[in-house]
Length: 497
Image (cartoon, rainbow, N blue to C red):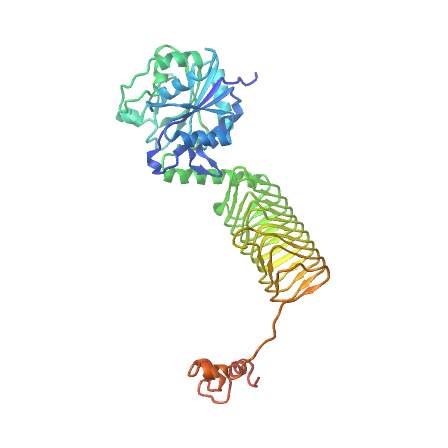
């Protein structure tokens, strides 16, 4: 029998989430690269419901904007007054035109990011198998504090759900809890919603009371216990947000290892849900992979790397590097202490070494920027070598300009390339040069002045200083030995410069 297609999924996301103490709505707090709401929407996606409705209330503009930007197939439903979960579902159903009494409605909280698609499919299948009017996803917890308790009859049938605030001591001792996730048959649900009252500790219309109403009307209510109670985990404050993040991290890292990635230290490796890792990749400690990052086969990333929306090619090695919106080609060596800013694209076999920063830079195959350089708004041709201390001076105070380096170019140490400027194929620049004009292919560009040495300047202008004493040979009570000579003699056993 094929899986039935629900008429609607209703995600409850109208609450304020006061315990978060944040201007950001609770359902938009993030773990593993997605908001809590996006995790929930991903979990219900396999149900292929005709409509996905998100009930919004507090900070509705922010939630509606997030839904519109990331899940255009989802429709917001405004709950002007937050009068409880039952009221929220009733508001959502009014937005579903033409729903039939025998069709199915799924309800899920927007703050349960650990739910999985497999669990949602199993819940729907259990509802159909039991031919129930309602099916509750339940879990058994060692500490059920804060959750509604599931009340069963002698034969194990579900009779009611009692919220924590309304539970007497006997009920509070029950360990089976309601996760807030349900499948309902639409007709019985709509009728039961009309019977809800606010006669409870919170003065709200509880969706949980629908279960008792259905039982009283002799409608079948089923339960689907979770194999992993951790999926029921709801997020209400920053402590729980962090705990959910750790669980999600462990889940993602474990899946990566089972799919062929070596993770040397899982506890310090954080991978967002949309990251793609090919087999035989290696992640070293303190590695953070965010957004749409992709790492190809045989690449090694880490230690101490943070890559966001970055592609790492096959066989590349990336260590102690921060990169965003960049492409690292196959067999590249990047790091340590390298910063790739957005728009960096490096080809095959490129080396970017220690303390190199790039921005909007295109570096062709085999080129090298070994150390201590800033490469901004630049094109570097194949096999070119950028010397230590080189600066691509791309900003004139008003606008950014581009530098183009040809192939097989040698840029001398401490060169400043003042954009816009071009250096032709096979050209050289001398160390310490400031290049403000184009350099033709095969040319050497040098800008230098003669060294001027002023004898006796220290004694005249800095008398009495340590430098003056060293210059006259008065070092550590040994007249006649210069500081340099004394130092060298101490290291080599004698001799003068």
